[in-house]
Image (cartoon, rainbow, N blue to C red):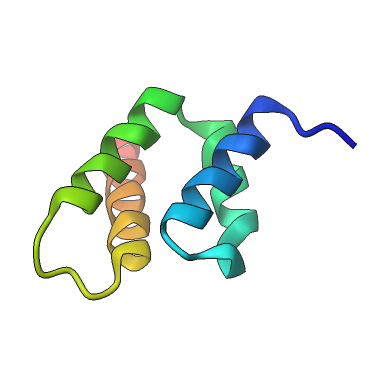
Length: 71
């Protein structure tokens, strides 16, 4: 079965962050936000020093963006 572009992106991000347990959330984000936005946040998290939980930090950045874009 071939995956759509968003699903492929979601699996790629989940694998990079070692966060397959949250794949449904990553898929939802990939369907809601642009690939460039998600890659920008991912790159930021990957280059940040001293982060113990990169997946959690990435998820929080996405949540903060969602919150601020509703206000």
